[in-house]
Figure 1: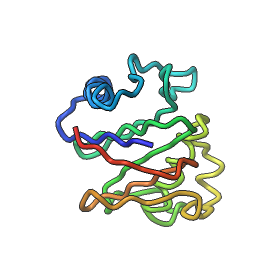
Figure 2 (figure 1 turned 90 degrees about the vertical axis):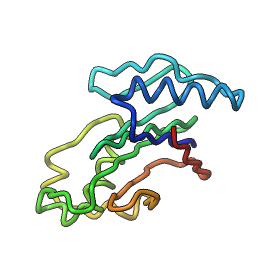
Figure 3 (figure 1 turned 180 degrees about the horizontal axis):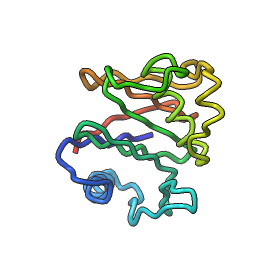
Figure 4 (figure 1 turned 45 degrees about the horizontal axis):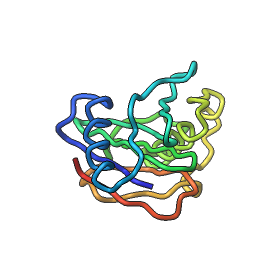
Length: 142
C-alpha cells in the first residue's frame, strides 16, 4: 500500500496527478481519473483508494486491497458517543474502506473501533487511522 501525502495540493485531483508522477517513476499503473460511487466513495480503475483531508493536508491511500484512511487534528471535537478523536478516526477509516459511509446508529452506539485499524504517527498533532489488509505501508510526500 502506498500513502501519498501533500500539504500543497488544493484537492484530491491535484494529489492524484502528483501521485501518478511518482507511480510512473516506479513503473506502477497510474491512478488516472478519480470517480465517485453513488454513495460518494472515490474509486479508480487500477487501485482501491481512499482519500482524506484536514488542516491543509491531503492523504491518498492506494492499494490492491480495500483500504480506508482518515486524518484528524488531535484536538478535534467528535461526537461524545465516540469517546475520543482516535476512535472517531478509526471509525471513519473503516467506513471508507467499506464504501458504505457513516452510519448514525453506529456513531450513537459508541463502540470501540481502535482495534480494527492501524495508527500512523508521521504528522505532528494529527491522528491517522488506516484500515485495510495490506501488510506493507509506504508513505510518499508529494
